[in-house]
Image 1 (tube, helix red, strand yellow):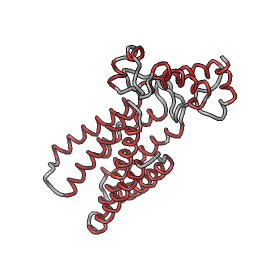
Image 2: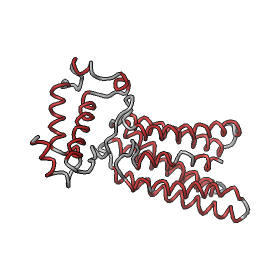
Image 3: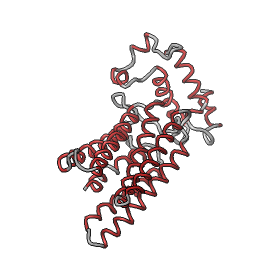
Image 4: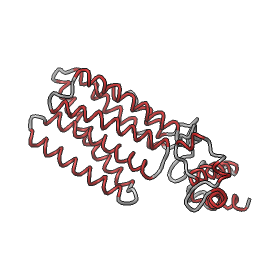
Length: 295
């Protein structure tokens, strides 16, 4: 009870994972249920459900999860706002899935890209021109990014987080490269230099992310720069094409503007409502957009 009451001193300046109760609970749970190698002690292993075992929930993961909800209960009982833990809102896991809503929305995005890629394969065989090969690569990069988003939201650890951030950026960069190649494809040297420079930068950025603690602010800045640059190029090109009579380019304008509008959901950042937070809703809002782009 004393530990619970001590939360009040920290509630205005810390997240849930920094509260005294959470850390005391975590320490006790680890001592009681986990070995020094982060393995389950026999009595604790018997309590873990099969889905969490399949999803690679470690003993420390289970302690964090259980102590998280005990801390949330303590905050709510005292009228405090729902706290975040390690930068995330608390979610109830379902069948071992850590963030069910975001996982589901990410999988839907993956499914849409996979469906549109099937159309590309039917209409544009791989053994054709370089630009067609690029679009095959584009679709594969997007599917890979959403696959890792699905995996990351299923179970968060250092590697899945790194892969999610790196692959998400790869999708943003591919959209930028696609805009450059589409607009400047007749200037082959310029296109080749832009492509090579972007790939080299991406590789170096990923190396930087993996060599230490992920620099979230810098990574976000890189995403914004490439995202805005690509969007501006696409909008200008599509606008010119539309005016010149290519009316189908309205889809590209709609895709770009809708993507930007969907991204604003990230700014809302509210606690989960029926399991859906702003991040999950952002992923859900992007599900139909690839259809506009690929068309």
